[in-house]
Image 1 (tube, rainbow, N blue to C red):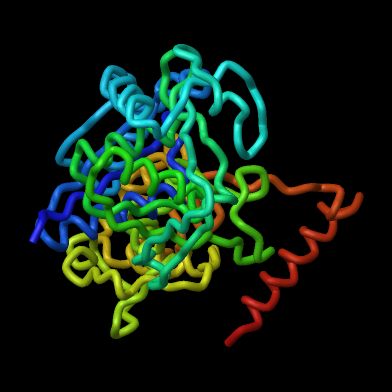
Image 2: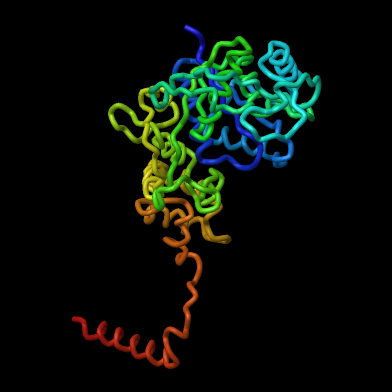
Length: 376
């Protein structure tokens, strides 16, 4: 049996998306369950979209969640490999040079004999391309008459995703590809490239979309918190976020919910993938986080709360307060609302008390003192 090799292939365009964390987690578990290899591949061929510092941020985030890779590749360092593959496709009649920007399904340049320009895939007519999706557990097919001649190599010599990712998957001997559902329409293009490059097709699985629990719509960068760094800044523990993400599209046979990463890898099974789109409920994430917080000792929780404790707070008081709120705290940032009054005098809006608030308070104190004196 061939060794299981999976990859997580992010583009360095910003912070780590919660959906990308799920892809990385499932790819990691799939490979490690069978003692295989987990590959990190930085897909940086679209230089215009690259955000400075993103590569380092992505690596730091993955390590924080325990998703350590066995091999690392940077696509921009592998350009000759993609050029060679494009030349082979042209030579074998499966691609052609293009010197126009036509959006037609069948580019007019495919019938010309250009020897320079961008390289496009020469999609055959009236053929069926199909594969079995191991997430959705069904055969999916396309008629090539609906598949366009995709650009493989741009005129500047940089490959598009269609070429670079498929060449790398073959060269790195990737056995299983896990990726987002939005890549499904491009799959026939990728299957043709695998076949034309005479390589063994990897197994392919497309993960379901993560929906907002409130709106039922796909998670949006504009509407929702979607980056893992945002959750960590709000006081969610990495192990809680990871456990929550485990169940966004996968379920164990016994419906168990709490897993460490090691336990998840041990129990992972591709039959556990769900076909229905999972919904992201903050209440559920809070439940996971609260569960992990209560597993911490008071000393461990003190260390985790460091950045959420008011400056200048008495450490002894903090240590006394932690046991009082431990059963109620859902995320670390709750410390202020739950215990802040122990350290900072709350501001009172005197307008709410009225003009004669001093008189009212004096009478209230006198009444309390009178009750105390009369109490036998």
